[in-house]
Length: 319
Image (cartoon, rainbow, N blue to C red; front, side, top):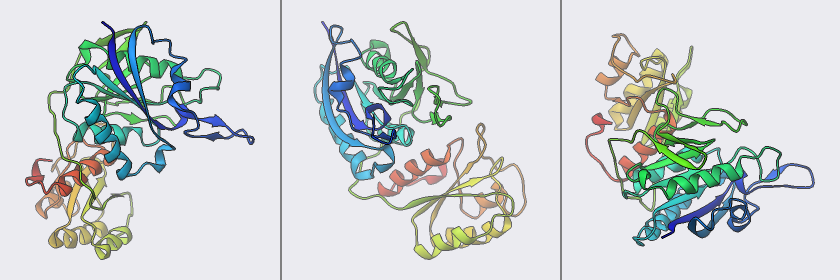
């Protein structure tokens, strides 16, 4: 019996064409055109849904909610083995983690894209899509969650990151590695996530902004966010989570006001921790009400905080 996979397209470079100025226009091709090159029809029953045709930086939370509802509807069919979502690479990791946090199903959701257009020499369109369909149909991919498949690697959505602007080896998970890979059409998975979180999607989401600390950074941005009454902030500190004294002064006011602030580190590996004790240290920030964000990278922390706020979750200190 053939495996059954639903392919949902949203646009991006993987569906792009060059215009008369030799520039790429995202989302110009439909899924049928791309799918015809993957040569999997005899092995997998592929159902195509062309949902959006947009550049990934044009994706909105309304789009993400619609994508969520589409996948949940697809999973009402018990014969579906998995789902593949094609997506532009610029916000691909964020969409993947949003789906990880908002869909509770043991079947795999695979998000993929390409760094090159379908017509480029050496394009990665067809290999990425073919590999994604193979993973989504694999019995070994059950309970793997939402993952990104790119350049033969299977990467979990919590830690995947676009780490090269143009190379076909564009995604990785520094410090965490792959969950598995695809070799000559064989899906090899050697580890799976042990923790699963789930939040309900909402019609509206609170404003959560990301603010970086760096040598000599002042309070200008935080002052503006204080005046704007934003609901949440992801604060990106140095090393173990340190920020400047000028920023700390406003952070104290924001915490007193009730703004939820999550502290993460700007480093590629490691987590924030209250190691030091001085004004602006992670320990100081924790004592005034800042939430320790562990090993989250900023964009993923923003999504989680946004969903926690929208769902009125208690217990932020266990972020």
